[in-house]
Length: 229
View 1: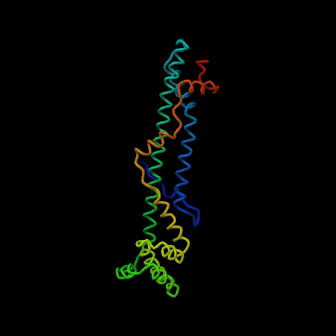
View 2: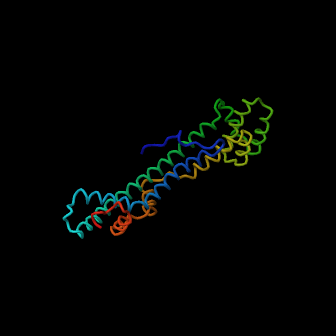
């Protein structure tokens, strides 16, 4: 797997980084699904190359047509398999990107500089006391308030105090609120197995066309199949 380019996936200022990742990969996967509809014509072009390079013009037209359809079907299967493989690769990259984002956000939210006693003290507070302590940060210098709120946020998250979590996030600012929302999105994305992805997209990607469908696609293109007309 090639991996993802983090620099190429940027959210709008103040926007959701998780949504930006999902849009980035979603659009590429959608393009591949669309490309599956061009398989008959692409397979016809490949079959035509085989006909032109391997068969003499003296070969019976029916034989040429049979070879054309066989080669077209083989090419179509290969093209479809390549599309499916690329879709699976992108799905895995998307999961990897969201996992990386979650790790990055956790690092951003961590109360760097807090002492063990700070963390222990915050962990002993109930939800109401966490909210009260967060409100008290308004009277503190900005740097101290920021660290205290991050300690309280970490404690609230660890104890599943949802109201306190979002109260602390609101006091820390919109970026923290968005970061928590992004974590929720990342958590919803269960890391898929390759087998599950292959089975999912095998059912969803347009089936490889038959030899007759490939022949029909060729006959609709004036640049193809001149030897079989």
